[in-house]
Length: 236
Length: 322
Image (cartoon, rainbow over the protein chains, first blue to last red):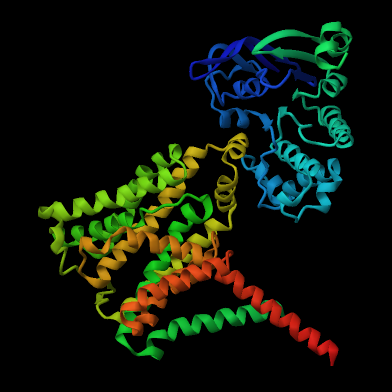
């Protein structure tokens, strides 16, 4: 589905990613873990071409997307739920969701069906539909961000730090939802997380980033058993 | 019931607007009302940039001047119909929209505002110094009025009615855009342009389109001004004028179409009402506007609506008590 090979990413003259490769298969949940500043968000932005990638190639469904800009990638179906949610806080929840499908032509009935699907997945959002998104709690705002991403009918959903600033109970709910999206809607998910424990728990495969280098990759269950990973990311 | 009452208010407002020159029967005030109409059109355009996308455009005077000069010079030099001049002004608007839109992609906040001020100043300098073409500081005189079915629109009252039609068309278009998918897109750009890009929207082209709409409304307003006064000079188009347009967008209610209309009316009419204060009229005007912005941060329309609901709830409480 998504195949990124040997990319080097730069912020002006500072190199942030070194020869990074990553792959996401159909119907897979793939996690990228790493500490602050490891380059996780940079990797996300590199995939959609929102930052300067100097070398390497990016392929999506067999198509070369190396030259595409961020908005073109979104139209191809790579939908990113950004770090820190970035919702439209002065708009209502419903308006936020409708904005998500801006680039998809839908008549009123199709729109309602799609919204219904989101409300089924996130019942809380139905209650809050007419409320300004900025007045919601952190967890609810994160739900808005994910639902807005799903409104765009993604072929690949990328989530940047969905657990950021959320209570542990809410984080559990959030990860349940990712599994449901993956199983019920058959959407592959690329998850970038600091919460390595959760990320390893729900993902099929996992990559470990450190200082811009990919230092490990493999089956999530195997990685969770490795001593070095346990020490560095799972607290011993 | 509620809908009927609303319709009734609209009809009453419509009748008042239609009969205004007949009721007032005063040339001075008719001119003021024509200016209100022109300002409404320009402010409706500015609303897209400053009200919805949220970029402070202080170049309205420049846009307005180019529209006025474009239309006036074309009709004066070639003797063609002012309607062609109007079309030419609209075309100029598109060009300006693209030219101002591109810097806006890179410049944010105050830097963009400074660029637009610079634009206005450059326009003014050109108008003052290209004496061969623009007549320099003398301005352009004897500009032909609009004609309709062979009748010259040469009196204030006739202009009022013709421009009222223009304003209705502009209002219809602005309303359609603001309340459409586009309007919502513009508003979401103000809040979070990164998120908009992640939804697959090419922000650059959207912003440039918004600038084009803004500039076309502005140049058309300028052309209407030229063919109404039939004399234009560079001294009219200062940055003060741009500031006033921004105030029109802010005072009524940012981003809303009725708010912009009310704002344009207040900012145009209020100074005229205060003329009796002699040399103190401008300072009084600005104090009122400033106090208004402080007291009603969501605009005068919002303040009015709050007042009405308050009176209503007060009345129902009274009825219950009795």
